[in-house]
Amino acid sequence: MDIGAVRAYLLGLQQRIVEAMQALDGRAFLVDAWTRPPGGPLTGDGKTQVIEDGALLERGGCNFSHVKGTTLPPSATQHRPELAGAAFEALGVSLVFHPRNPYVPTVHMNVRMFAALPAGGEPVVWFGGGMDLTPCYGFDGDARHFHRACRDALAPFGDELHPRFKKWCDDYFFLKHRNEPRGIGGIFFDDFNELGFERSFAMLRSVGDAFLPAYVPIVERRRNMAYRERERDFQAWRRGRYVEFNLVFDRGTLFGLQSGGRTESILMSMPPLVKWRYDWRPEPGSPEALLMSHFLVPRDWLA
View 1: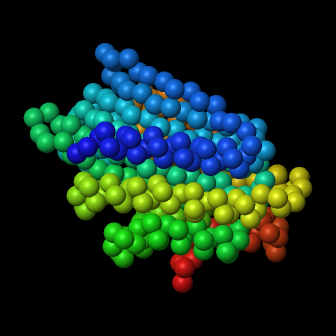
View 2: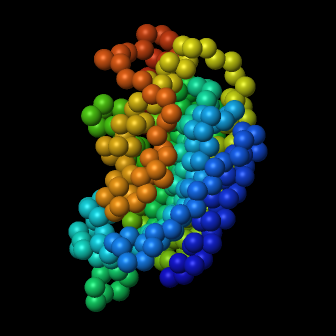
């Protein structure tokens, strides 16, 4: 278990992604480096990089954190009850980008490593992460491109991983109280170490490295599409679903808040402008209705 190698990779990944998005937007990210002093229930350090009111990104953040805690919170042990009460070490990169143009999809990506340290026992290490796309206006070609990049990232590690992680993503990013998916999915995995540390870490790197090739071509295709107040209004409504998922279901958000993490860094995933309407439905036959009927349904985009 080489946590130093994982940390070095994650810091490099964060910087590559931030530099690429700065070049696309034309505006620099705010850099907020932080530390947690020794002696408390949570120690460690991190770097939050955020952009607001950019030309491309209305709000976005790409965070690195590396923390150690005395007790795993409930969100981290719901699938590993035998680790309840264990100390832990966690590090990862997490990003969410909310573009200004409604035709450019919101995107999320996360890659992380956990090490649970039960008293008197051996460390239990696992990896998690993935990426998923949340469009307001869908395009078949964009969906195929994104899912193809996800599949290709996992291909060197076994043909069975992509269908398994795709379904996991479809199941995980689902608003149960709305009975609808958050977006068009991608891949998601957690509690993963079945290839051994080195090979599982290599898979994590492949997923992290696939993010820019998966997302940037979509941004470049859609960023100059003309839009009106109608599209912005629908975008604000769709963002409400994003907020609901993150605050009710997302394990990363819950883990951060339950473990005493930095609230500003955890909630950088929230979009800047959001609307809720009572029992609103898109007009039948509209582009907004097409998103709901054609894109927000689990499907094999590569068939």
